[in-house]
Length: 412
Image 1: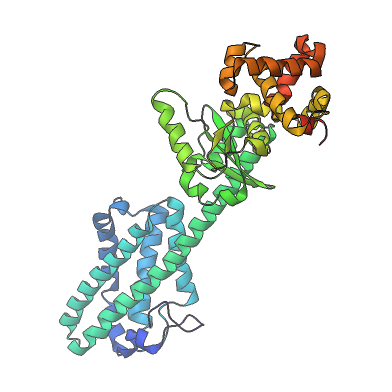
Image 2 (image 1 turned 135 degrees about the vertical axis):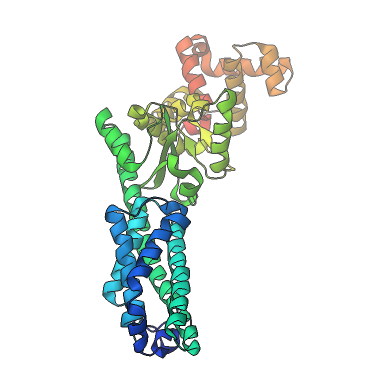
């Protein structure tokens, strides 16, 4: 059984308590050397662990010294000859707090564990020398050595627990601050001073320009890790919203846009236009509008940039109004047969696009110019003078470019 496989009460079983095999008088033999051993460990830590390469002074130094003193006192005075767990609640709390403190300073967990391993090595060497000097029976050296390393495992586990819990708390707090910042930005009611204060607390450097990205929650898995600390992410009702630095679309910076496109691949995401952070809400609104328009979606889930589809987004921005306009504009075609309506609607759109240039119309439709003339005659019969009215032609082109067809315009 390992230290992670223990009874429900957290205590060690007898085979994991090597100190229980030591006679009580070991404490008497070692007590006189403990203060000297404390000093040696404390002095060696900054010399051999790079992250602690500074004098162990002040509050931090006092915490290190106290941890070493508690460890040696517990190990060589309290535990020999006793069936007790390495740590009681009070001592466990000390080492958990050391882990918490290290997480708050931003040092790595490996630095702390290296210091513990160093302490174990120094202690074992020193105790071996003391045992030889005082004539400790050789058979006791094995449980004595095991006691040192089992105890170090226990305080390491307590510190790891404190470190990871504090780190999780910090991450959770940072994400809450980032989400609060994002929500305030999207609400559009954030002053410059307050924005910079909230951004500093959230650990988010404000970019010169930002873009908002909108996608469905089911396509957002793994995005936090993929986008890194530069992205603010928030889950809203039915959507995920991201705000990050706007990638440039030209020059050497085009790589940034390609990199973002790679991360958003197959996620059906819309990327809003670049804006200064004060107007991030505009970028979000444009991306959300595009995302809410199914006819604009890419079937393969490739990301789409709002700035590349402004005309179609504008045409789709109010479906109800556009549908009513289509119903009115295309009503003259309602009496035609379905296949005739579709053929003439296609011809009409191409005619409007090319301003009546029959050769270009025939080329795009892949038909003979005479066929174009025949169809245009039919359109004249249907729309009469409307085809000569600039306003009517503009309205017809709008609804046809928006994807409306006569049967939809007629309510069919």
